[in-house]
Image (tube, rainbow, N blue to C red; front, side, top):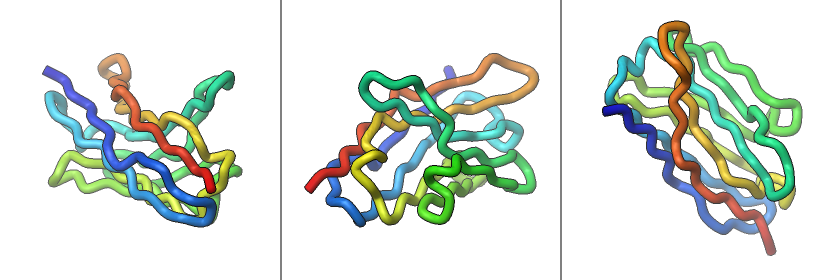
Length: 117
């Protein structure tokens, strides 16, 4: 049974930091590209960051470059999103996605990140 479970969200002040984790099971994690997406109220879901399965190549949305870092630990079937310098506009539900050419994408249920003073 496939499971994708995000954690680490919460309430943080502007300028603060959070680290999101996404623990996966039920599929060969090391063969999947992993990505973080977010959806703010009234807005479409957008790609935040992605990381390739083997070499760990990363991409970022322009809005988070220099502030967010995506990483993965294939031994732990986990992908992380380190978020520094958080802004009010980063407030959203953050979702983890696993993608492979051999199966439909797997999504987690999301974790709420709220940046507010």
